[in-house]
Amino acid sequence: MSPNQLGLFDTSPNRRQVQIGLGLAGLMFAILATLITQPDVRMRRIDPFIPMVDAIMLLGDVITATLLFVEAGVFRSRSLIALASGYVITALLLVAHLLSFPGAFAPEGLLGPGINTTAWIAYFWRATLPITIVLYVLLRRADWANPIRSGKLGASIAIGLAAAAAMAAGVTLLTTLGHDLLPSVFLNRTELNAPTILKINLALIVLLVAATAALFANRRSVLDMWLLVALATWLAHALLNLETWGRWTLGFYGQFSMLLFSHFLVMIALIAETNRLYARLAVSTAARDRERESRLMSMDAVAAVISHEAGQPLTSVTLNASAALQSLDQKRPNVERATKALRATIDDARRTFDVLRSVRAMFAKSVGSSTHFDINELIGETISLLDREMVGHKVALQLEVDDAVPPIRANRVQIQRMLLNLLGNAIDSLGPTRRKPRQIAVRTARLDGRNVLVEITDTGAGIPPAKMPHIFDAFFTTKANGTGLGLSLCRTIVEDHGGRIWASSDDGNGATFHVQLPSTG
Image (cartoon, rainbow, N blue to C red; front, side, top):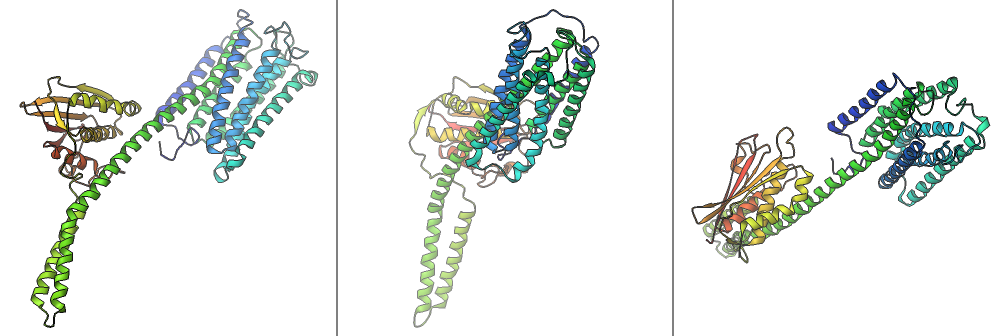
């Protein structure tokens, strides 16, 4: 995900997400092919079925609308407000559908004087989201060029909510008080009026196909992909409805099950993808903070080293240049002496340039306050700091520590910084790894009774042989956004503590960093 991408609205789906979407759409049409063979098989009448399904879909639509309104606030998007408002309309129409359905709360329903009220509410409800998606596609073109101003965002959301409530109220009034103005859908409580049903369903199928075509031609994001899967489910539902001629049949139960799936599909996708993006953001933020701290430490160290190492040759430059001027300002200029001083000035300037170009030490020679501590304990503490980052990158950790390892005497903060750098590099190296295990192994061992060995191995791309001799050089990096100071800093820390660090790699099959530190045991 690009750092400039903020959510589902501007994040393109990856291959795995597309495959899951296609699989779910194919599953719906497979179920359609199964149900369409015997849609009118009579089933047991279950009066609580409709209230249960309507209540579940109502909850799903309210949650979906809320998530979309949040996204609309982030992107200041009219199209997302329109889409969220469409889900508000369907949620309100579900309330009307629930109250009017015969047998749900009353034998004849609580709303409407006729047998067609519930059916017409359902048809308007089914038409709402395809129309909303077409509006979403049309408004999105204007969003990129002219997003909503921050001061008008709240008013725009309020207008969307008010419009949704007004449209839902209008549909409810039309299907109840204006019941007789609409064509008859039911001949009686269980049998449908076939010609009317055919016309309505054909109109809905055309609307669904138009919405699918419009969204598919302008698809850009993960949200678009899941809306396309939902449209495919609604289309399968409409095709099944063409073959279903009554309530309480296999086709009737299948239709509402499909609707339930489609409404929860978008909600679950929004929640899952939002959480995934949040996790990646948290991991990226932690990595950024760690890198920033490392850079600040490195820059402070570089500044100190430059001041220390470059100070002496710069002082010599000043002294030699002054000596040359004095030799030339005499009544009888001493050209030979001035020439010698100027040559010395050039030599000192070159030495200064070499220091500035290749700073090799990141810290002053003193390692600061040192303490005795268990390296195994420090490794466990360091790993816990990176736990979320490893989970976010789906990295498996293999820890093999030798309990017989003696304590070491060192600066605990600096050794932990070294471990963080090496583990962070190992995590980064696993970024492009796809078809092999994403693992990091950390091992400790005792060497010859006087040294402790720490090894960090990853299963990433490895280190090319041509780059191996330079990986610990200051300002040398294999990362696109690296400073080239991390491994140089590690080497300086280890060497300042009397140890040594080296790397080994089988190009293409991971790398291992070996750290040898003197023990006190």
